[in-house]
Length: 351
Image 1 (tube, rainbow, N blue to C red):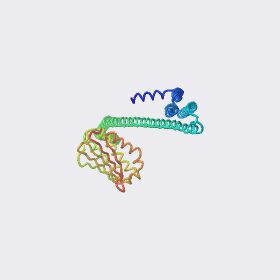
Image 2 (image 1 turned 135 degrees about the vertical axis):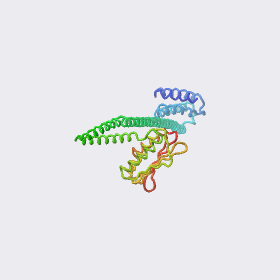
Image 3 (image 1 turned 90 degrees about the vertical axis):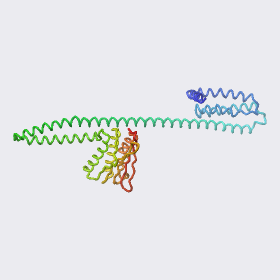
Image 4 (image 1 turned 180 degrees about the horizontal axis):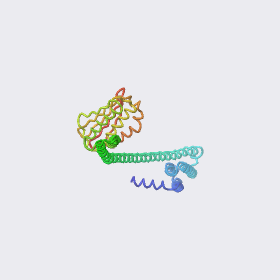
């Protein structure tokens, strides 16, 4: 029954205003005929409200007002023809005025209800489109991050296995050449020594680049090793205290999860250094019985309020998104009067 009513309503909404008015005129003719034939004591006023509301709903308030005025004219005419003389005069005029307001009230009410329904439908459609746009944006972000991670792994692997091995071969051959020149006491041996040193530096930089692009090894303990090494690099680079704590081993088989957790820790530490001006940072990794765990980054910096670029900008957005990618959650809060704590909790089914 409800579907039939919806189909009928959709049918009338597709009709033109003149078609709706034609239907209303036909309905008024029928109602007016019965109003004329029935005794004066039988009021038909309530039946006139049906075409009035119908016109206001499907053709607009002006059409509803038009049908209301025509309904008033018909009722006035039928009353003039059927009413006893004592019912006419100023009493009849008063009734017509009341009836006019009665009819216009129904026209206004129907138009208001229609406008409210249309507004609700428009809001629902807007919400639906916003949800679709948000889902599409999330899919695009996931794809961008996936492609970015894949390309970083590919480039890191190429640097390590390709260019790194190639440079290692060059360094070995140059070292052999250096030894031969030294044995023959040729002056060119000093130049070859410099070349060996430059090649070794190139190998070191290549490995650093590869480790930056591919920080977590493929084994289950790779995240712990990567975070330990990262903490040491932060200490050497910024001359601050950066410690990695992991009381019990947290083994993560999924390399994708491990990479996302490492990037979250990396972003949190960089925010603490750049925006929070922290001097002490602790990276902690805890496991749970269900296979998941928590990653914490705590610092003694000036806190979230001083580090707005890192607390409310793209960095936080990316960290939250990475946490969502592995089925986890991210919380950033102040750690007392000074400092910030970034906590990422992930489940055993993450990734």
